[in-house]
Length: 345
Length: 247
Image (cartoon, rainbow over all chains, first blue to last red; front, side, top):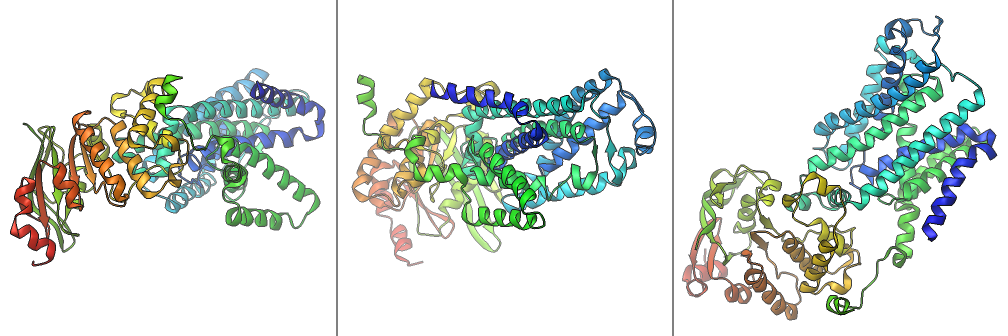
């Protein structure tokens, strides 16, 4: 009952937020983006023990796939990117919304396939080597794409603006992100309750033991990462249309920004927990935007300090700290009864 | 009785160190087989070879008449040949019940089963086996917070949860409180008789292994030194020399 009420309040808050805070519509949409990337990062990083620094690869790739699919519904991609914003290209409503819809699906599926291929190569690496290996993939992808003229090279791609009222557009993108965020949350909540989720935890705690117990660990790792990549790819696709213009190094494959932020969000909230990434993403986004507003000039210093403090002193995050202080809230207690006594009852 | 595991002329070296040299042993179905030998005699290396942890240099290993020396660890475990570790391995961040549930035999599950929740019967089975090893009261505690002896018992319960055909135990009583050892011997026996699991045990505690095993092998310096019943092994001068360092 209590839980139903809590979820009801959260859903109601999500729906009315863009209307009671009209000035913050884009900020709230970005907060949902942070929640999405944090939740999906936690699928491998927190629940499976594979700290990927390369999830941003799926974000950037999702952007490009969605843009290419969206453009190709109406025009030749090479002509479009060659014009570099100089030509006049009009999109009908059907082409625009069709582009977002098909582009998102294509981005998700393409990124999931990429995760399987990249994972096949990199999942042989453990611990920090996996982190560095995946980071290398993301950086290399950014450099490669920025030299690929067919998708606009270093200039990136400019997409059509929202056809209609500017403010309605902001609300539209807010709800796309919020809807995807809720979908991801429901999905991972279900996933962690299944045997598949338990197998992911087993891989995190002791991969060799899991193998010795007959679990095909590589298969699980690939499926889990592909699921995460699917959602990140869709998030990238929505971002591409929301941002209107993006370029490879600073926006799409932004390894030092969003690529690191998603990790810090999870660490801040508590990795390996359901709510940790959500709480962490909200805390991080608020902290980041407040420092950008009130400590301008020092914002990167403040952010760096937050990261250092989190990594050094607060690794377990909010949820991990709560679990340590209040284990009984999470059902960790000594049971006095015996199984046979329970059976009698 | 049938031989369920047949190891023939197996050799394994690490660089210049010969850990196993032309070892041939047999494990009888339904029995309890013991493996003893001084420290560094190659017992654990032999276990690792059987369960596929490393490729062997030569020889053959058969499980239920199937050659398994080229198979991967997971695939051997899925045949029903399971091992426990000398340095106990459990999933430390999960509680005992979760540890048990993830040990359900995956070889009997489809992909669809993996994306469903555990059934009530699974929970009951986990509870029953946790009570069997005496960890029922602590089943909701993080398994990493248990003592070493309790973790060892949990690992044993997890192995039983997996319903193996053969269980390879690497020093099951090491680190366990002496008063608990009698209880553990009793449970190992019951695992053998009630659950019908064939046991193959590495053990340093002679009282334990002599009591349980019906066939024993002794390794020394990577070679098979002696084999026979516990009585024969106990009275074998070569075994006594190996343990006292006459080699």
